Structure formats: structure tokens, C-alpha cells
Image (cartoon, rainbow, N blue to C red; front, top):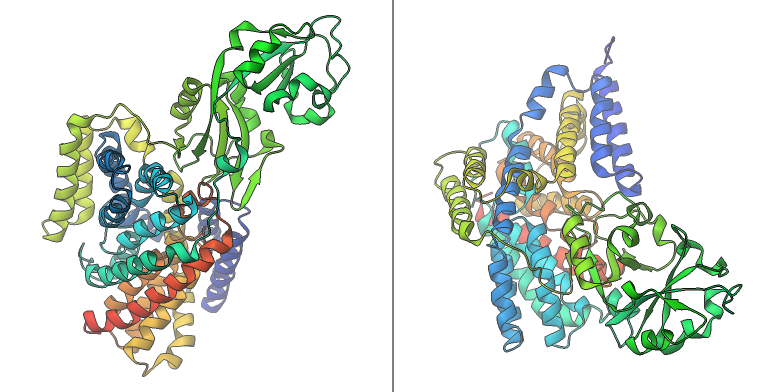
Length: 592
């Protein structure tokens, strides 16, 4: 502590109190997880639970830097269109052979996610899976949770499959263990992945609901309509009426989108608006109604907008979207882009009122209406994803072989122990930048800064738990009850604890907390910690039962129109299957 020292037991209890408070704040979601993690680490630093000399070792931990390097390499894969190749092949075959395309895609996505970060893979493949759902006449809600689960299962098969595996490896290495090989957890990971794929294939159609997405729920049969803007001239009989009382504003399924008075939009309080001379009313209506209004003396059409064809699109807010943390009102989408947000989906709620006050979060789905060109411009500026169609981009396709070769060299070099993976990944980043596969600003924007902040914060918390004696105290409490347990029971206990915490707290945060405890427990019991650390890797990565346990689950939440209970119904059995498989496989495969 700054200025005085605390007794060891006092430090341990303080560390436990900070940990519990941090977990509660994670659950309450009062602040973002990275803010809570950094704040907890800062409190521990002030209280002396983290010695100043240990700060350097926290910041120099290999795991976050390796993850950042892999993010950049995967970002280069996306930029060069290497990931788009699979979606393009699927698009060409989806109409002719939809069922076969789905089966091949399931295996391909699972296999690719063993080496590629899951989030961009889900973003790229989501429009393809939605196309497949239309071709097969299957609800999107029966397709998108399986897509997320495919990437999670694939990520359990290699060290670079998920950032969580790299975090666990970094923590274990800092505790004195030898670094894990890139394919060291592959034997058990493949068994888990195959079990999961069989379960999804047999039960997805039975256990997942048939539920419409937001755009289906809110659109009418005529998806393509027009925006038209009409002005109330002097002497109009509509002056003094509310918009919902005007018959011509309701004909043919017309809908009042906004009322503009001067430079102000009155959309927020539409129910209280009384029309005045000079008001401009923005309508969404069919072309026949647009033409009819041109002859109506009570309104005057504004020619520049009277023939703007519009469409509705459903866009997904991904981690890199520039809307995150901002309200729809402050972004002034109508003024800047001519695009109107009609509704938003968050968790299991469709929101259609007070949209201007909605602060955008990762995983939200927005229903937007406007001219196609305007929506495309907005999506490009804000880095949003249209979940209805595969994204069309100007890829640097000529550089794709370079990035693929770099990724293969990083994986192969690490597998052959030519150099540590963090060194190989760093060299790979240098190559993709130097060869122009990805620009520097694009490269560093592909690194999830919030994840990096959370990782460094949690590594600090882990160091505080270790130095304060909290880990040792916990081991002294639980080790007597675990003496003499069979390897199967011990593996099950570790997996169950890790899996449960992962469903309610960030998986990387759980990895940082649980890994040192498991290593110390194994040493106290006199058993090899390596199989138990592998158990932690899979338990922290295989998160199926909630939409908040893993980021890909959050991404499919809105587009699939899911409810929280859908993940519980379909995910809990898969959690149980994974626990049984790991409990049996780890002791047998790793001579534990």
C-alpha cells in the first residue's frame, strides 16, 4: 500500500473482497468489463496488493501481445478477401444444393475457426447462413446459434483457436510451466468438437425455436417503398391536425416517418405534434401514393425526395462498429445520411420508440430504412454489417496468398517449435504490413482495444490475488477435500467450475482467475497440472448456455430474434455433453 503495509491475511481478504465486487459488477453490467477489470487492478495497486515491481511483468505477459498480433493477421485475411472466398463459394451453390452446402459449411467453419478469430468469421458467414435459411425454408433462428457454436467448437481444437487459450497459456507460462504446443489440446478438442457437431445436427431443428427476425416482424409485404417529403402550404386544411389524423398520410400503407420544422426533427414526440404551416412531413409510401400527392392541393411535394426508392435492411453492430457507445440521436443519421432507424433489437426485445435515446451496444441489431446508396455509405462509414446480404467490398485479392502463407507459417512454425508463437506472430504482422496486405490504420483498428484493456486489467488482478496470498488461502481451504480423488472427478470439478463461471462472466477473465488456482491446486495435490490447465482452456472457451458467455453468441442474438431462454434450452445440454466428454477424455488422452 502507498505509505503502509497490511498483514498477509488482511491482504488476502481484501483481494477476495475486490474479486467478489468485480464479479458482481460484471454481472450487473453497470460498467464495461474492461473498465471494471482495470479499476480493480488499480485499486489493488493502490492498496499494495500488486507490488510495483510486478507491474512490468503484467504488461510484458506474452498473451495479450500474441492475441493482438493474431487479430492483425486475421484482419489482413478479411481485408484481402481470403475469408470471403468461402462465402463466395457457398453463395454460388446455396440455391442448387442448399442442404449439402449447409453440411459442408458447418465443417468448414468449425475447421477454419481453429486458426481464425471467431468474431470476424461469424460476421462474414452470417449473411450466407441467412440465405441458406431462406433456400431451405428454415427460420433464421434455427441457423444462427449453430453458426456461433461451430466457431466455438472449432476454437477448442488448437492453441490459436481462441484468445482464451492464449491467455491461459500466458498465465501458465508466467507460473513457470513450459509453453503449450499449438496442437497440444487438439486430441481432446477434436473429440469435443465432433460430439458437439453430432448434437447440433440431431437436435438443432427440434430444440431451437422457429422465430422471425426483426426485419420480418416489422416489414410489410411490399419491402421496397419510397420516401417522399411534403410541405404544408399556407391555407392547408391539414394545419392544426395531428399527423395520425390525416387520411392521406395513411393511405396505401403509408407511414409518417418524421415531421421537420425548420432545422428541428419532431420525431421523438410524434404523438404530440400538431401540424403547422411550413412543416415538412416525411412519408414512407408506395409510388402510386407519391404520384397521387402531387395533385393534392393540401400538400406540396418536395421534388428532390419524391422519387427516392428506399429499402429496409437489418444491420448488426459488431465490435469494430463506430456507433458503439453513441446514441442514435447524437449521430443525426437522417441529416447526415438520409437514413432512418425504424427499430432496434437488443437481447430479446424489439425496440421501436425513443430510439434517439438508445445508446448503441455490440450485438444490437438496427432496422434502417433509406435509399440503398445512402445505407451503403452509412454502413461503410460506421463499419456495420448488413446481415441480409453478403458484403460487397473492394478486396486486395492479389495479396490473399501472402496472408494465407503467413498464417500457415505462424501455425506451422509454432507446431515445429521453430520459435515461440508470439515471435512468429510478430514477424507475420511485419510481413502483412510491409507487403500492403492491410494498411496500418486498418491493422490496428482490427485489434480489439477493449479486450486488450480487460486482459491487462485481469492479469493485474491475478497478480494481486497471487501476491496477497488469496490463492494460497483458497488452496488451503479446498485441497484437503480433494486429496485422493480420482483423475476423472478432479477433471470434472475443474471443468464444471470453469464452465459455470464462463457463462456469467467474461471467459478471458475467468481464465486469468482460475488458471493460477488450478496450477497451485495440482501442485499441492502432487499431480501434473498440465491436463488440468487444458481442462480450463476448453471449459473457458466452450460457452453455450448464455448469450453473454461468448461474443459470437452475442452477435447472433439480435439477427436470430432469440430470447435468453433459447440459449439455455439448446446450450445447457451441449455444456453437459462437453463436460462428460472432457471428464472422460482428458485423463485417458493425457496420461493423468
